[in-house]
Length: 365
Ligand SMILES: Cc1ncc(COP(=O)(O)O)c(C=O)c1O
Image (tube, rainbow, N blue to C red; front, top):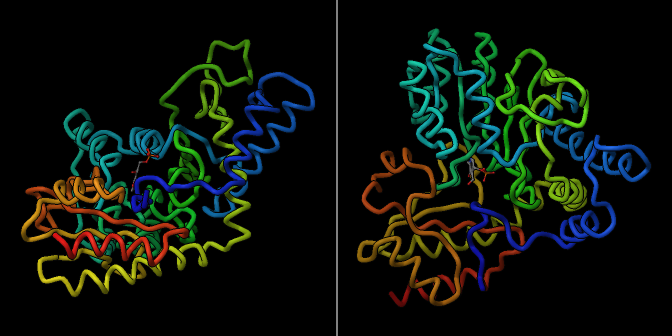
């Protein structure tokens, strides 16, 4: 199979990640902070290593990094805590459903006002003119690969004391995340190359979140009241420790390969595909936007629906995605509300030959 859906989840995961997950199942088995003894302590150290690697990237304190089941849970947590009743929320057209849907659910329930921007320039202007009580934005479009200028928005938000939530799901593992956002949320299973079912919320000291989930944390176990200390307050329930083992190993792997080198390796076949698609008269290409782009693009075809092309490619064992990609708003901008787009996203292991096989099928349509 030729796998070209890395924006959904990276595949295959590096061997060191698989080995670390297996190690947990075979030789560890315990959760951090549950019990005593060398095995629990060693487990806690591995989890702490992953937390520190996240903190190094976000610029926040390691004890203000909480693991959760994914970016979806992290974004729900951050939005529920910070989109207080009556807030004016500034966001972009590029958001994933994990921002769009909580915001939509809260708009009526909390009387939110939500303003969507087409560009970060527009967001900065609005912030400078005194608009907005909260910013939530994706760092990159999961449909076009456009990398958004989170640094400028974070600076404009900070200047006004407005908290900003950055959804770094598409960029963590490829792009530095230290932009000054108060909250950084990401998913572990995309460019971080860790297992699914894991994500994190990393929060600066000047912003407080409220736990949305209450339960066992291993600590203060005799108390009825949920602890308020980070990170336990946000990690109720038995954690996904095998996935955290995978993430700790993934960080070492990324460190060894170099984040930039991994991004460039994924971009090279994407550049080749862009050139090929630009030469196809039936194709309308959507790629990038504001600055250096991620290895994700979308296109539509004059004669075929994205879902049809997706099915034809699947028949040739080429895995890409046709449709809306859980990003409902961006299709208003692209003019693709009828059937969405066909999305292709490469990873560091994608080869030129993978792209040539995709192109051969598209040429034969
Ligand atoms: C931009 C963006 N945000 C959030 C998510 C949700 O991530 P998770 O699967 O970890 O909940 C995704 C995943 O598709 C995404 O692409």
